[in-house]
Length: 135
Image 1 (cartoon, helix red, strand yellow):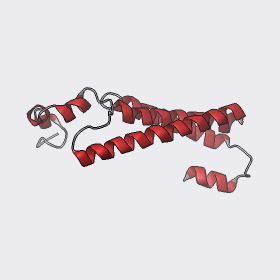
Image 2 (cartoon, one colour):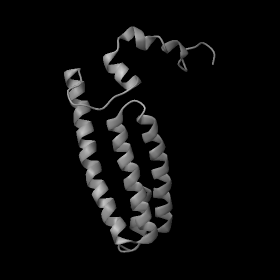
Image 3 (cartoon, one colour):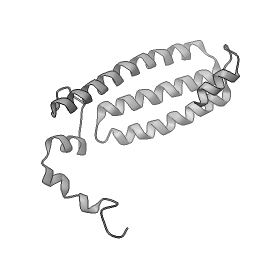
């Protein structure tokens, strides 16, 4: 929404330093989410990583107006669309088939959730927030 308001209020060929700073800050937050996601599922983490890179490059373009950075952001955006489409398709097929068909590169607890038995997963439930009577 902020990007849309900025585009409405500025001239079509100008860049915005404020928008650039906002996009770079958003890239940092998304990168933190990608790092956390990488502990369990690498394919969704790749989507977040590409999103962070796209935000970073777009933010840098807004700060510098460098055409090379703008083109790099476009290429990363196309890669992001392709990877996100694959992950969404793989998750949907998995949901319909009730088994992994296309690899999502799960590891750790992400792999255990799909391959392990329910008893192993339920062992940790008593230590989860909201399960105990008092926190």
